[in-house]
Length: 320
Ligand SMILES: Nc1nc2c(ncn2[C@@H]2O[C@H](COP(=O)(O)OP(=O)(O)O)[C@@H](O)[C@H]2O)c(=O)[nH]1
Ligand SMILES: [Mg+2]
Image (cartoon, rainbow, N blue to C red; front, side, top):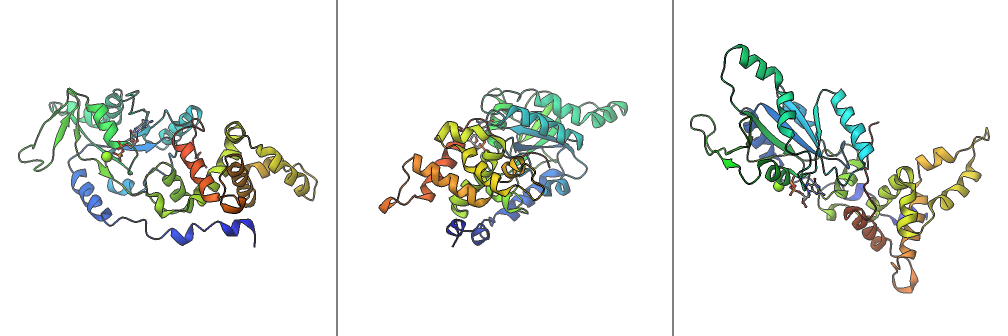
């Protein structure tokens, strides 16, 4: 039995995550979408791919689209800039924000106006008096919808209340003379097409951890860290990752005798990841009775360190 066999598979637990209230949330969005000009989707800048729900492209057909790369304070600035460009190239209007401090939040008004400039122009030509643009915030759980709305609306905001004849039961928050927000954000459930999406979404706390095994999450995190942030594991845990990998490389050099260092480091095997996890566990004294390393405990420690930013600012995904 290989070491990886001890690590329970993702597949075995990937079934029951889908929440029953998904249909209701989707219905709410379908109803609300008729009332709005622009959908502002909030992404977690640490996972700009996994936190974006492709369903919304269908739901928001014909609407202007803004993407906010939120929690930018927790993500890697350079990578956030790459993602911004990536989505702009796809036609989205993109803004980098930190809803917690408010950085970049106010300027969302301008981004919304830019996204809606066709409509603004059209109305002006028709001589229609400009009314505030109507926006709906959408995003997966824990992406920061409530935090963003509170920051964007600020203290001075007033709920405009029901608009007779138009939006019975819907509350609007007047942000300023240019923008109104629907006060109920659209909740989208993450798409789980790739098993990695499930793991990445779990890292940011969008789904209940009980659904996944911490070992699976830790191994995925280790693979990413070794590949993209090689110094972090050494710095935090005193585990020299290269020492663990380079010997394999020397043995693994391909038939043509090429140096495989790069290939190996960009694609760490699960075996190696388990070895690194064990070393982290050892360094941190995560032991079971009989001095066996407690991989679950080590995994939780690593995940917790990621979530509390003890590993620094880390972006888990890059465009393909
Ligand atoms: N560091 C940081 N934390 C944030 C940011 N935005 C939201 N949060 C935190 O993320 C968690 C989820 O935010 P919340 O607004 O409740 O997400 P919602 O489920 O989409 O409404 C909370 O603990 C927030 O304090 C941000 O820009 N930076
Ligand atoms: Mg909320």
